[in-house]
Length: 298
Image 1 (spheres, rainbow, N blue to C red):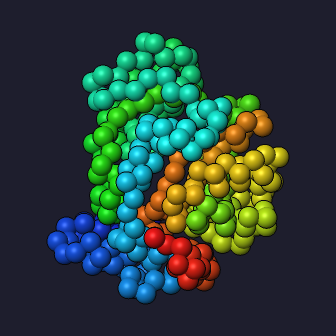
Image 2 (cartoon, rainbow, N blue to C red):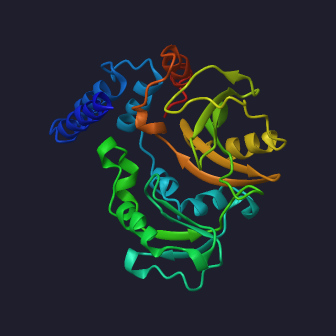
């Protein structure tokens, strides 16, 4: 217990020092990588998936990216790509600041999020029992930025707060979250997040739903998730909306036979989370190498 405390304290100090680094973005990310990954990233000749993600931050920019990372404006992009509105989660309200939040006109169940942050989520399953103190989490999320990981598109997002439809299982739990890694408009692999309400599990699969024996950030589920009936439909959606980018992760829900869009992510875990076993850092990195070799990275 004491050892765990001091290890966490040590990492906090190291990260604080890394975040105060005043050098170039490249050197800054290399310093963060040493702490997070346990190796020095080569961003001149990337080989691992995490190296490529950080290379991507530094070397690829598109005017579409700030729109796509904005959880409110991304709906505009999806409609422009011809995605049917039935796949979009209904938004009940959009506010420009925490002071504007008003729950009076919201339905009994809803979710409140910020449009730029990760993890800033408040779930209400019964408005009559909802503790408004939970909204402090949204206020904290609203104050955050992603610039610590040099994820540049987020600095162009005009911060907002929004309330949307609650997607849940029949027994009231969070739905499975399917995260597809797309390269030049083709899905190459994915992972499924389960047990989000208790102890989150991640399970990786290839595009043919073959389970991959790898862990990243969370343990595998002892019960390997089964392939959803709508899997082919989900693949079609991902490939339809990912074509504009060399790489993007498309997140979808599939609950009770209904597919819903979650979000677009360009920098999976900011390229700062190790794989176990480590050789999958290289195996997944090969998908970036393939699009470079084919001169498809513009």
